[in-house]
Every structure is written in structure tokens, then in C-alpha cells.
Image (cartoon, rainbow, N blue to C red):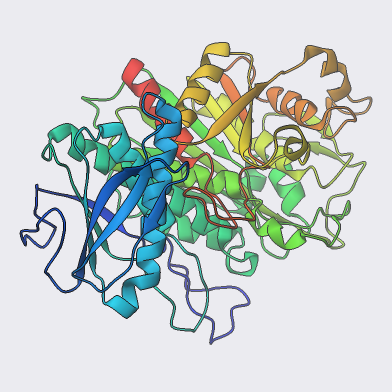
Length: 503
């Protein structure tokens, strides 16, 4: 973890990234992680709780958890969604999250160290993945306090009535990896901005990924960015005392199992705080701008899952990271900026900073990494919250097959996407009279932003994902906890998994 935490008073707790969460493990029939035989209805071991899963006709699953350790709890889950895979996945994610939250609340007073879940006959591998995602993500709680806080139950043991088949064990491992990807993404986005300027964000990322074989992290400083012409990143970061960074993560699988000639590049917007710059934002809700790097956080979470799953395809992730602040050195409306590769853009709104940093990274990926696919993800435009609300991400691409693959990847793990048009009739709006392109023209903001980014990928296969709505939540629902949701980390990981399997 970073040693030099900017502006951190001595008494402030040191953040641990990722935060501790429950781990889901597989037990044999009637046996928990501790190896103690258990009856399907009860547990006689202090420090453990047996949970029996039953069906109910209620439309919402409810975790009814009470009584001392050693007693049996019952987790009621709606079974009315039989045959509906997407809603069934949601029910089991929510059930796992309900269980994890209630167990966390009761852990200390009941001295619970382990929860053993006895699953019904016919419980599928997909349901096991969903339940594990729910347990891991639901147990996550990011807090910076010196108070004695509740902690997650360390282990949740799943006991399948049909026995622990290899498919079941793989499904639980996959659920753990995807759940932990969400948790890592949330934790990074929830970190207060005084603790994660670009240089320290890079250290957190390096620390979180350092123990994963095959995954390397390289950090480029402001001098490297100047030497290589990253004009967009430098312009956005110019108003801050904290210099920008380019963080590059590389996953190199075992060469014998790698998908031939495939190289997927993920790019995440890494604005660690966004005041709007000279085009300053209203004060209301500006505190949420600590999550303006949720796209980069999702990319980090996805890379962690890709490594955990050992996916047989080469993946590189790029995070152009900066603070968008006000000062006498901040970039201004009317400035002309030269991006990596030479394209010039006319700045018309300094609060449209995300596309400025993404442009450099996209051009760099296109020119130097020889990608077969580029996907960028960003909390880019407030327009998306109006268009699609707070629980659906937007896809912009001319590749209908890719759009469908992203949608289906997200749907399989509880993240909803909708494709919006890259409307060519707005292409003229992106043209500038003084530069090659205009950064923030009038018109449909999310579409023109995507058209701006498209200028930097040439003819590469590419999709832009706008997560301005679902990256944040004001409420708890399903496996989601406020504020940062971790949205799109699972989608990106499953997208890579899907593409690797079909390459």
C-alpha cells in the first residue's frame, strides 16, 4: 500500500485495498470447511452456522438469519424464476448478498467464523457463480474509521446436495474471481481523492495486483508523458500540484494456451478528482467526483479477474490518470491541444476532460500495441444518466456483433447494457475551424463524445462504454452497495473470457 498518503492526518486509518470480504469455498456433502460433519438441518459446532436454502413463493428473497452460532438459519429464495436465467441469476446474487450482509451484522455478537450453506438438489453451476458473486460483493464495506467496525464472516461454505462436482467447484471459483473484481473496483473508486492522486493510485494498483503471476504493472510519470506527446493527459493534469500518470497493466498468459494473435486492450478513464476545471462544476454532489475514475477502477478489477481465471489471451490495460483542478496553470476553453499521434483538438469545455485523457491512451494503443480489440470505459457524460438511468451502461460501436457480445457478457453476470448509435449525421459537429476536431460540441452529448473518441482508434475494432449512471449508487440493491458500484468490472472480464473461448 502507498507509504506517502497525501494530506492524511496521522490518526487516519491506513486504507487496505482490497478490503477484506467473505470467501466462498466448497464443502463436501454434510461437511464444512473445518471438516466437521453437519446434519443438513443444524450445526453443532460453535463458531459456525448452518444455512438451509428453501424456496418460497415471495417475490423477493429474504435471508432469515437469527439465533446463536450452532443453530440453523434458513435462507428463503424465490423459485418462481425457473427457466429465466437472467432473473434467476439476479435472485441468487441477491440471496448471497443478503446472507453476507446479515452474517456480517451478526458475526461479532454471535462469534461466527463460518457459514455453511446447504444447497437444494439441482442447484446449477450458473447459480453457484451468482451466489458466490453475491456473497463476495455483498460482504464488501469500504470504511475509514477508528471505530470498532463489523467485519465480514471469513468463510461461506457451499455444500451441494448433488456433491462437489468439478463443474461446481469451477463455478464457485469463477464467482469468487468476479466478485473480487467488483470489490477491487469499488474500493479504488470509493477511496477519497486526497488519498489517491494519480501517483498514489498507481501504487494502490501495483499493490493490489502484485501477487498475481503473469500480470505486470508499469507506471509512466509526467516526464515520460511529455517526452511521448500525451498532450491531453498533460493538459487536464496541468492545473493540479499532483502530476498525471499513465498506468499500464499487462496480462501475458502461458504461451502454449494463448489465443493466437489476439490482443485485447482495455482503457479506463482515471480522473482521480474532477472539479470541472475552469468550466467548474456546481458544488452540489461534487464530492462524488472521487468516483470519476470508476472506469479505470473497473479495468483494474477486470485485470485481476482475468489473471485469477487464467484466461488464455493477451490483455493490456491502460489508465490515463490526472486530477482536473483549478489554478493558474489549468487548461482553458479555447486552448488547442496536441494529442499522442498528432491530432489537435479545440477545447470548448474543460469539464469534458475524460475524453481528453482517453484520446491519448486510445491513440497510443492503436499505434503501439497492435490490438485486435480496444474497449474503453468511462464515467464520461451526464447525458447517460438521463438517457438510460442509473443501472444501465451504454455501448457505442459500429460492430453489432461486438455490441451483442458485450450485452450478453454483462447480462450473464448481472450488468445491463444498451447499445446507442454512433450517428454519422453528428460527425460534422466534431469538426473544428481552428483544430482537427472539437472536444465538446453541442448536440447529443454522449454521442458526440463517442464520435470524438472514434477519431483516435482509426480502423481498429473498438467499443466505447459510458458508465456515468451505473458506476454509482445511492442505495443498496441486489449485491450493490453505495457509493461506487464496481459496475462493468465483471462485464469486461467475461467479455475477455468469451472472446478467448471463441478465438
